[in-house]
Amino acid sequence: MPKLLYQGHGSFRLTSDNGFVIYFDPYAGRGYDVPADLILVTHQHGDHNKTSLCAKKPGCEIIDEKKALARNKHNSFEVGGVSVRAVEAKNANHNPKQCVGYIITVDGVKIYAAGDTSKTAQMKTFAALELDYAIFPGDGIFNMGPEEAAECAKLTGAKRNIIIHLEPGALFSREKAEKWDAPNKVIIEPEEEIDL
Image 1: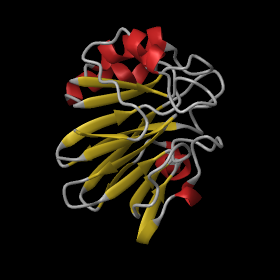
Image 2 (image 1 turned 90 degrees about the vertical axis):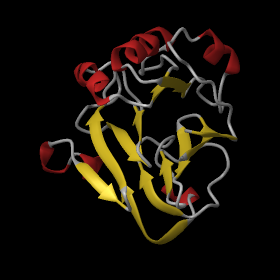
Image 3 (image 1 turned 180 degrees about the vertical axis):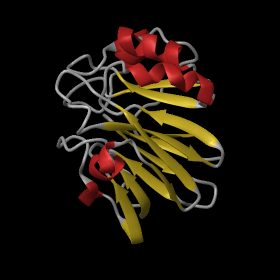
Image 4 (image 1 turned 120 degrees about the horizontal axis):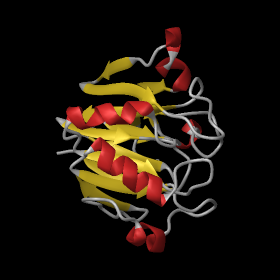
């Protein structure tokens, strides 16, 4: 079973059963010392794209929104037995042609990592994917706020929902996470690692 280490803000690390390491939107917190096999970047804002923080294995692949949206479509990738599918992301400050979310399948666990986004038309199709986890932003500054994130959690129908990206300039807000009215929510503190 894979593990998720929440680093803070919009950043987390996934580790598969066989030690394949994925960083998502590296920027905040600690835990970048474990060498990466894959780094996923949703867009080029400075609080999501600090790939230089990550230790890297030889041949580490970086997939950013440019690769994800090459040939003007949302692309899919297979890297080291991990499946990555780029999906829509957009908000008041993010052009959908310069921003993505990802659906990551690792050790059979499907994780929707929304990135910086508000509700998208594509989200209504995700319930059919039978997602294990969905990870939403919730600061309400350009992105969806907690109410919209709860609506999106219901729409996508994941078995468990996690809210991150809650407090600009801080790693996390436990108070806001506890108030989040989403089904099957899981609250993860920065530097906490859970089995998925």
